[in-house]
Image (cartoon, rainbow, N blue to C red):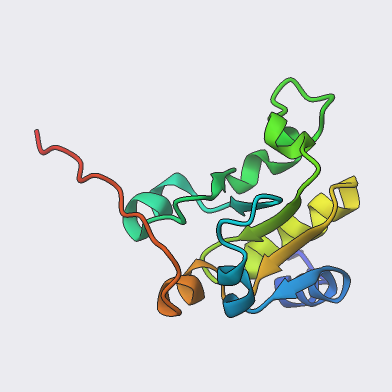
Length: 137
């Protein structure tokens, strides 16, 4: 018997966005350089290599988020213990909505995510740092 998924990704994203703050890209870009804001890039490392990155963002792969936030985890990262505002983003805003909701559910606050993600960030002219090209063998 095939699996019967009762809640799809669209419903999960809608539920997350109903419970978290969503920033439009212009508001997010205005936060660049603000001392008490940490941008958290949850994209896969290959996405950063391919698309570039926000030069001030902390990179936290989505698969490590819960472990890096929890101070009881052996993988905890001190950045998440700071008394700051955390603005999550991914490529298009779907994973970051889920990540911000998870972080908020864990007690991290305040959190938000960027509507449209890094794609919207680049399109709106937000700062982007491209990686060094890999040397060819």
